[in-house]
Length: 216
Image 1 (cartoon, rainbow, N blue to C red):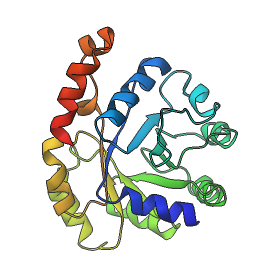
Image 2: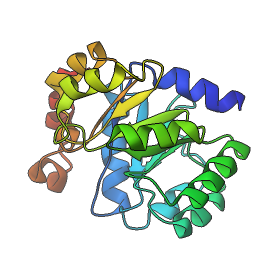
Image 3: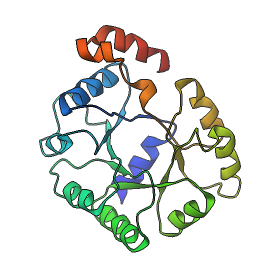
């Protein structure tokens, strides 16, 4: 539990880039550029082909030990079983929604035993109450912008002032401070932090990093 608590603290006021890529090589290149400009937290996704290979290898030398590594888009128990076999497990795992109750309860318990922070995904007050009642320590609020953005987050925080809500979904870099002011614990960002197709195809690190540096 100590590691989970440290992860929660390190996530506070942090920006979490969600890396969606067409292959593992692309995901690694993107993550390296994000680290180079100062991000200290990364979230890979189960939808990235061959992502298992990354977590089935030793922690890469280019990855600072202080960097938080997450794995998102967990939607099935089969993914849980795969994840538990990784010799290099993530610091946190996130789901876009809620698993079935009995499964969710077991998943929370299993990840706590492995010292992995689990973020269940919610969209409504009822789902948030359910997740908090089962002991979820940090909650992924998804999809944030379609649900009403930081205005809705502020409204949601009123009856749940202690909930550690982390908005994901459509958040732009220019909106991050507004989300923090509304009470977000951390903020997840995906598409807006990814390279353009041209930058990715050419592995144009210089222009991609210049773009990213605007948001650090």
